[in-house]
Length: 321
Image 1 (spheres, one colour):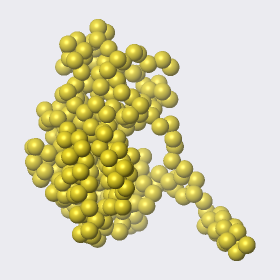
Image 2 (cartoon, one colour; image 1 turned 135 degrees about the horizontal axis):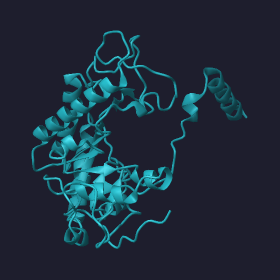
Image 3 (cartoon, rainbow, N blue to C red; image 1 turned 135 degrees about the vertical axis):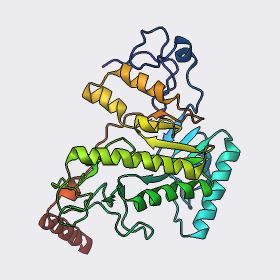
Image 4 (cartoon, helix red, strand yellow; image 1 turned 30 degrees about the horizontal axis):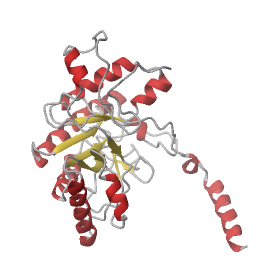
């Protein structure tokens, strides 16, 4: 399909920066004025989403390269329990700021619906279980969290607080859309699942899960904003309208895929985008990610034990040669 000409757009790098003036306005009650469209939002022009790839051993040329971006969303990693790692992280953040004082650096603090099991700070009873008491796999290497548990909300908010204390300008929380993240349940394995969030031994209806997760993500956003303060940047991957006043903007992660592959309306995408650049918390960091067109290779997670063993044995045989 052909997209409209957008003279103020930077799609390839990650952020859409404006829309062509003079087109018919429709969509939301709060109309986008022609002057606002022509002017474009006052916010970082080019972002890097998840791709900074900066850790304790990053070469100086890599750090200098990522300093060219106006907005860095995640892509930093460190061992938080290692003082040398955290000290190096703070040095890198300070260096990036010295190279580009206007850069906004956001830590990928957490994903709301799932977590890695090796974090000792995660609440013991914080996992989302099946009616039979088993954990539910989330994104590969993680398990689904039970956002109805106050201690899980506290754990998530504490991670955002830790991010700003370490020197980041703010926090990014993944998967903040206002519903239950059913898409993530057993995403790699493809196995059927049922969730029992209230622990009554019965599977919960999807509508109930959607309502409770929407409420939980509102509580999470409120708690994060309270902990990091009004002057820090809070960005979510998607977000419900109820959190509009709490965030500095959202990430439109898959929206170009929806337009190119699923028939979503481009005009509506742009209207939604401009709406989210109007968040009362400034600066706005709302961004549209360029479309990768890449599907994660989940085939390995869907192999049977026998198939896995066969592949492993093949590898062992090759190694013995």
